[in-house]
Image 1 (cartoon, rainbow, N blue to C red):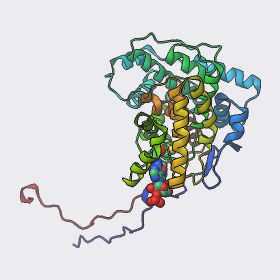
Image 2 (cartoon, rainbow, N blue to C red):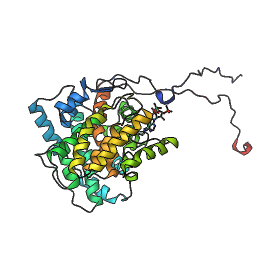
Image 3 (cartoon, rainbow, N blue to C red):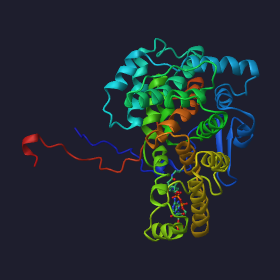
Image 4 (tube, protein in one colour):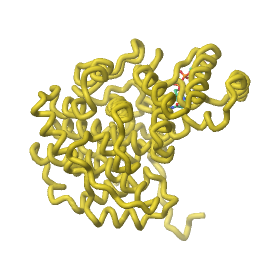
Length: 384
Ligand code: COA
C-alpha cells in the first residue's frame, strides 16, 4: 500500500515585522506620521492637552466620550480609592532582589494581582470596567511602592482629594506636588496613553483574544514594552546629558556620534516623519521645570542638541527626549522611566482589551513554512 501523501503546503511570502499589515479595526486611536497628528477617539492630542486631564482622556478611551464634571468626579474618586495593593503583593515587592529592573518587577506584580482579584475571571462588561479602574490604579501604585520599599521608606496611602498623577508623585517622593509639577506630569501620562496598534498593544490584544483574563493581557503588554526597541529606549534618552556639560562641545560630540554611525537616543521616529506632536507639547513644560529647578544649563544644552541634530540629520526629538527631561526635573529616578510609560500605556492597553472582548475573534495568524516536508525519522540507535 502506498504511503505517499500529496503535499498541499502552500509557499507564500511573509511580511517581515508585519509592517503595514492591517491587523484589526479600532476606534481608540490613530497616528498620522506624515502630518504629525495623534488622535484619541477622534480628538487631536493637542486639543486634549489644552482642555482635558489625564483622567478625562482615560475616560474618553474607555467610554468613547469625554466625561461631564459629575462623571469625572465619580471616576477620579474611584480611581484614586483603588490606589492600594494587597499586602501579599507588597510582600512580594519586598522579597524581590533590589537589582531587579522595575519593569520586571512591575510585570511580575501585575501578573500576581490576578491571584488576589476575586473578579479576575469575570468578563462581564461591568466587571471589566471595575477591573480597568482597579488595574490602572494598582499598576502605578506598584511603581510608587517599589521605590519606597527599595529606599526603606514607608509606603504612602493615596489622598482622595488629589488627582491620579498628583497622588503618584506624592506616593513616590513623599511630598505633595505643586500645580506646575502636577500638570507637567499628567500631560506626560496623557501623551504616553495610547499610540495605535504598536507591538505591546498588539501583544495585549492577542492575549485578550484567547479570552484570557485582563491581568494576563496586561502582563503580555508589559513584557513586550520592556524591549529596547520599544519602551526601553526612554531610559537612555537622557544619558546624553551625563556626557555633555559644555554647550560649545555639543556639535563636536554629535558629529562624533554620527560619524561613528551611532544613533542619538530620543531622536527620530519610525512613524512620525515630521516633529512628534508629543515632544512639541512637552517642550514648554520641560523648559519651565528646568528653570525653576535651577537646571537652566540642561535646558540650554537640550535646545542646542535639538538644533544640531536637526541641522546635521534633519530629524526631530521624539517624546522620549522631553519626557526624560521632565521626569529628571521632577526628581524621578531614571530607572522608573519605562515603568512610568508602562503605567500610562496600561490605560490604553485596557481600552484595547475592552474593545477586543466586546467583538472578539481569536487572533491566530499563520506562518510561511520554509522547511522540508518529506524527511524520514530513523530509529534513535541509527542516528548520528
Ligand atoms: N540618531 C541618528 N540618526 C538617526 C536617528 C537617531 N536617533 N534616527 C534616525 N536616524 C537616521 C537614520 O540613520 C537614517 O539616516 P540615513 O538616511 O543617513 O541612513 C535617517 O535618519 C532616517 O532614519 P529611518 O531609517 O527612517 O529611521 P528608522 O525608522 O529606522 O528609526 C528609530 C526609527 C526610532 C528606531 C530611530 O529613530 C532611533 O533609533 N531613534 C533612537 C531611539 C529612540 O529614541 N527611540 C524611541 C522612539 S519613540
